Length: 186
Image 1 (cartoon, rainbow, N blue to C red):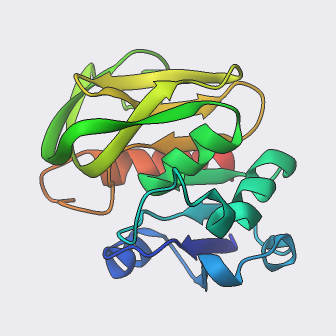
Image 2 (image 1 turned 90 degrees about the vertical axis):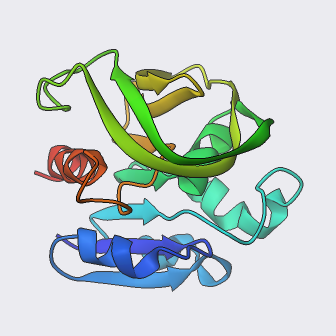
């Protein structure tokens, strides 16, 4: 499997790279173009610590265009989740306070993907959440903060609002990430 990891300014890049089985290519968001993804089987959009998407969409326009126009499998993580929501026609809202730490996530659909779990713990660190969902997206799991796991209804696009690469010893996020990766690229 050829994985392209787009680094959106993640402080957890090494942890994310360690979570991906096999080899991956890494490209910084400001160097990304659709041609960069040509030979990738899966594209992963990382989190970010360099600022919000809202008000900075032009910095990420290449990723937004890619999300809107590709049929390649995509997994978005935190900021990558926000990119997917925005690119597919949803909207984001700034949360009253930054959400940091472990969160209980309740499974709503597709329990097979979640290994039969009704709920699990994962780690999040974000200031933005979902205001409106895109039309062709469904929520698979949620927390008290809102949607946590989404998927596109007809394309191999998944997104996690939390960080599956962080606190892997106490959370289910890493297992879920690998389940998604295996599902979209068997």
